Length: 114
Image (tube, rainbow, N blue to C red; front, side):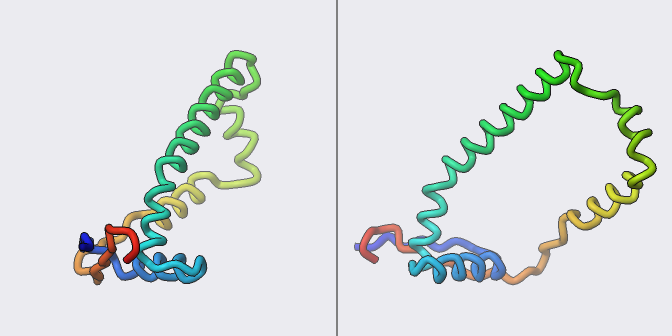
């Protein structure tokens, strides 16, 4: 007996998942299962890297290997306009409205051997 579940998935994500599965010679359901199984490890690694970056930053501050922000900004103004760059980055990454976007139904087989 198979346990099939249906999840709404944006058509763009489904296409990405199908391509991911095709490159690995797997079914879409198996590829999704692999990704979901690996996610906790990726999340743990990201967390550890963030903690290490904060730890290193604190060590740099304690060891005085930093520069005050106003000095950094003053010395960097000649080479780059940070406000323009920040504005460009913010407009490029602003969330787009997904109202009315197409969704597909992704059906996955929850049982092995399907």
